[in-house]
Image (cartoon, rainbow, N blue to C red; front, side):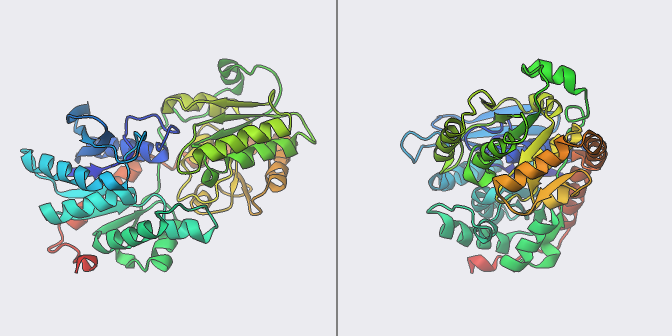
Length: 413
């Protein structure tokens, strides 16, 4: 069996946290890797803006990456955008038709990839599986900032959903959003929690980790990992440190770069807050780094904060827990699936600096509770593996491939 994986704007070999790259890159690479190891060969198709030739790489046995050229449509931008999808879809279909292998299904990641996969489904007459990763109506419901493509995106999400033979939901909240906001047929939804690579994200001593990242003092470390944008709440992490330092010494380490339509604006706000609260000595901003290196930072941290406005799953929280570090996160979306409130971390209902700082202080002020919570976090994370996720997806692929007819695409009527 062979699966075509469409990851239009997020290359699985790009560094997460840089530009448009984030947890979805990790998801695509890890899930495809474990599918290949389970016997389902995968070809990942991704766009490469500004290049002229196609490039194909064998990532490992049964797993290939095809980087396809797309012309830039936004001045000065190297990121694939909506206008480049028709050209990209043409190249995907052309390459698949030229190939000597037969594809049994196509798996789209994110709505942009879904637009291209929609075309692939009809041109090759194969079933389509979709992972949305985030949903525009869900973002709007929690008051997240939206750009000028919001209406277009909701329209396309509805079309993609209408044509998908299966839709993967990372957590219960995402499944609920699909059912209630998009009226998705329940039989289409496949629950597929994410996983972590235990070879990297497992418990370890904090002392050597702190020395490795250059903080060998006793000042507690609060860690933020992810893209710098308002949706992820980077500025709130800085405000949380400012509120926390009214009661105790602490520092914040941020690993990530500006991303999205308001990334640069959020980064400026972060810098302004650091200056306003005189936190220059206590906030360290680091560029995105190879994914496997993050484990050292997770182990070095006393608490990992995930102050997102919305999350479909919360991979950062799960990776931190895997390293035995408690998480303080917004009580929203998939973070509820990952974090067991009061057991493996703390979920914050009131999304403000005072509430986040109080939650962090509750952990730092009680070493025994912190240690017990760290142990429970590591134990809970053990149940989330990419191998299990891939096995569940493999079963879904086999089921839809065996269907006598594809889902009738009402949105194309």
